[in-house]
Amino acid sequence: MTRRKTLSIIIAFAVCAGIVLAPTPAGLTREGQNALAIFALCFVLWVGNALPLAVTSLFAIVLLPTLRVLPASRSFELFGSPVVFFILGAFILAAALMRSGLSTRLALAFLRRFGGSPRSLLAGVIFSGGFLAFWMPQHAVAALLFPIVLEIAHALDLKPVKSRYGRALFLALAWGAVIGGVATFLGGARNPLALGILSQHYDMSITFVEWVVAVAPFSIILMGCAYFLLLRGFGVDVEDVSRAREALDKKAKALGPISKREKGVGIVMILTIVAWIVSGRVVGLASISILAAVALFVFNLIEWKSVEEYVNWGVIFMYGGAIAIATALHESGGARWIALVAQDRIAGLPPFWMLMVFGAAATFLTEGISNVAAVALMLPICFGLMEGSGVSPVSVVFVVAVPAGLAFSLPMGTPANAIAYSAGYYRLRDSLVAGAILKIVALLLFALVVRFYWPLLGIGT
Amino acid sequence: MNRVLLILSASRVSNSCVDGALNAAGSENAELVVLFILDTVMPHDVRERMSHEGFLGEAASGRLLLSMRKELKRQGINELAEVARAAEKRGITHRTELVEGEFLTRALEAAQTEAPTVIFVAKREHAALSRLVSGSRAEELKDAAPCEVMIHKGGDS
Image (cartoon, rainbow over all chains, first blue to last red; front, side, top):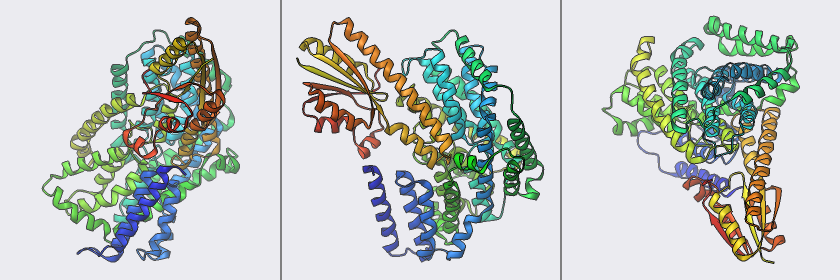
């Protein structure tokens, strides 16, 4: 175990024990205090990445009844949240997309349309990553595009670090996947997680269409901004991309004609999305998601072994645990107490600016910790802070979940960044500087969306 | 014959470090041994994050790991060829080697077996906080190596 991990575990337990043993402050219940202790423990473990995220969540589930925050039955019951099953179904669909090869075919088809010039190829990498991340997890998209972008880099003989175009290309790979991942429930599981916490707290929901209409335009414009920033920041030191185009053509040709399995997976995917749009509210997103997963097996489009190979089952523990922690904070009064303490500091801020503070906090927090953890940690507190302000919890979900997905700078922010960085084509300071600029652009654009676009959709401040 | 050991890896490439090693080998009329370490830690970390944070299974993360290792090896071969060309130009006796493993372990092994008079190594780019918490492998090499270790700042290539 590394020094960092050991240090994180020691700090986590020390902080947790310190909070549990401290005298209970006025206005806070014993259950609330213990919930805060578990919350702090998870925060340190998630930030320090001392244990796998799912194991930390699992640990929290056990600590909740042990420290008498929630009854055991309630704590374990939260694993059964519909959101967990929605995410599970979405991962199985993504597994089918990857296993069948349809995702690679789509990525190549998309990229080949953009391969006319260096500029359009760069746009192609961003937009193909973004487009795919609308429909499958952004981490999977980055992993899928990684060998393709490497192939482009080799075909163009780009030198790691030395080629400015190479730097732009690999940042485009990460940023496209990250930006596309905020637009739907499928790109980043933090979005349905936020939905699950909303549902547990307020019995409210956001439909698939409502989310896409609210966030997709922001996501698409931000992809454009990222493209211009990369062009301006790194420039193009390549004149001809015909060899890259040839490499893509060769790769596409090697795939052969579209198979029956790919067609079948494509049809199930399209029908699932239509069902989410048309009957998501009536049937439930999770039910549709699981029905789609079952359909894949009924039509022999995927085998169970493949699902096991493509999906890490820790996903259930992570999201189940995150919902349990957030719910415990809410039900024990811990979140409300933090809100009361913090309210003095932000009292007087108009609701719009409070929402912007949440968004900024989420987007900076996500550079250091998993975006799922950022949502799980921030959302209950933000709900508490906004209570009584007249702002809808739905707005709070959007302003926390969307910026929490926008990690552009550090490899530790999100696996997509780590994957792109691992190729060695750009330096850390490239992503730090360019990522910080994109972050500011994203926050300004997001502020405009919250102030002027969302009110048109009835999402008010 | 004196020996200068230049240790490189994908995340520890630096022009000034390579120049320093070439200059030292040239001025001391020493043999230059260039070692490129295919660091297994970084690809393994990324794969682990894909699995633990991205929740992708072995098939997807394993394929990614293969791609990463292949790319790092390609970069290692290219980097070694480039340094060899520069050494040839200056008439320096040289030898190159590509090894895979944990950076510090491999670097210390080479320090023992090659018995160089001086080692040239670049620091990885790190956030200050990250370096504070996890330390610097280059500094650890300096502490443990049986000879002088010249550390250069990484990422200036």
